[in-house]
Each structure stands twice: as structure tokens, then as C-alpha cells.
Length: 133
Image 1 (cartoon, one colour):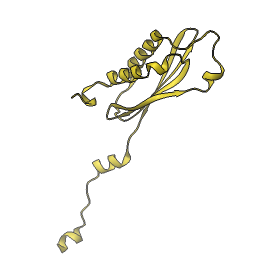
Image 2 (cartoon, one colour):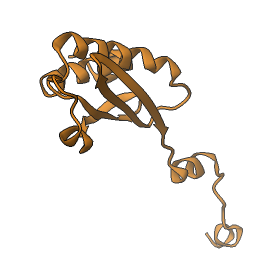
Image 3 (cartoon, one colour):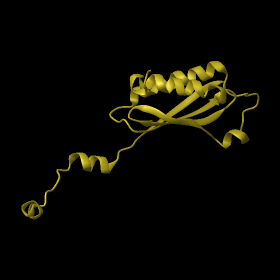
Image 4 (cartoon, one colour):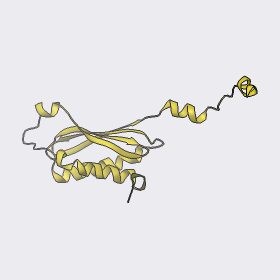
């Protein structure tokens, strides 16, 4: 059985966006959010922008299947800018304007101070306690 550790993050992002493809078709704007832990996609989904309901361009029916593929390609290409972190969140803001897909990417790295302190702090031994044993 293949585990997430054996699949590249780029492939995982592509698979997640492929899964969201049905929901993306017909949308004109939104934010795709992927939560990353140990360089693996955990939870993922879409935040629909409320502006989408009010300000749709006339004649715009939302993303076509080809535009969804373009969005997937752009999302994977954007991973070239991720470096040096394994936990966090990736957000892809997208909008369809005049038949073109525009994507903006935000990377958020997360660290846990408790893990860092535990890993790098030498244990203190109570010398008084040690001599009493």
C-alpha cells in the first residue's frame, strides 16, 4: 500500500484539486485551502467568496473543465516557491475574469515551540535528588 510519504507534495496537491474539480466547475471566485503536515496534504477544501454571489460578470458561467485544469497546473507550479517548512497551510485565491483564470498563492508555515524546546533543551538533573538515591 502506498503512503502519503511516498507521494510527492506536488502530486498530492494535484490529486486534491482533481477531487475538488466538480465543485470548482461553475465557480467564478474562491479560495482553495490545503493544510500541510509533514509535507503531506491533510484537510483541503474551498472557501467560497461572498462577492461571487453578488458581482458575477454577465455571461460568465464559471470555470470550465479546461480552466479547472489550468488552475490545477498553476497550483502545482506555485509549489516551487515553498521552501524549508513541512507544516502549514497553502491558500490559492482564484478568480475568473474575462475568460481568464487568475491565481494568487499564500504560503503559511507553522512551527510548534514546545517541540523545538523539547528537542533542543538538555534535561536538567537535580543533583540533590541524585545523591539521595
